[in-house]
Length: 335
Image 1 (cartoon, helix red, strand yellow):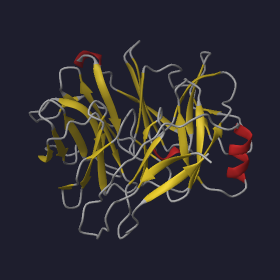
Image 2 (cartoon, helix red, strand yellow):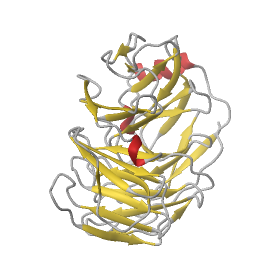
Image 3 (cartoon, one colour):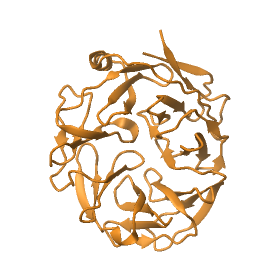
Image 4 (cartoon, one colour):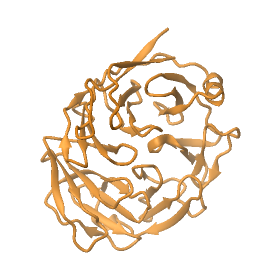
């Protein structure tokens, strides 16, 4: 039996402490067939999440829990798909078609493998796709025609709304959308961060920083900005208000990836160049110790909202314990 490991917290935590994490990633060997993976899930074994890549249509299932996970096989993607996008918490998958057809929502665990097209108004081949912190909304951008759209109420009742174009501001570095879809933010090539509310004209956010990546805190219009030039994390209060407060919440953090635990209590910031991960308790603004991994190419919260995929290439997972969860040690993931 072969294994890769998830490292859990190395010490007990209390509600006043910042979660402490350590990581021991490992390279995964070949995976088993799709039928065994889906059969295991349908027989009652919970699904922890999915691993996408390295190919555009490669998708693998992770079954079990963060305490006892099992790597399943590859999952067959519906025919006609060109590329897939896995949102935070992996409750569905977004599919791009080879043809000039709308994006589609696909739930791999459904008995039917059919994908449900989004409304025809959605751009068929957007150049940028970003999901909200919980995966409840997505923002799509097509450079051709400077077309930007927001899809809300995912995955059950998707609704599409148009947003103001952003080409006049210059090339994009990253996009972010709030869970309710009412606020969209972008970091631009020159380090500027801008925001649009309910499709209104874009406004520059008033702060002196060089924004590398932006992300909204779950359930809020509060925006986290990572400035890799000054190695700081900033928190901008409700961007829907006429004026916002901006505060630096962490120093010596050069993150190009941001994610949150399920309810937004803890921010995770990762650097793919330094292969480091930081945690920030947003209730106390306490920065946790830095943890290192051999490789970080993503930062995706899985279904439980406290386990994160760090690397699709090496299938490295990270566990942030929930409040009063004093578990310590390692969890073996079999396949």
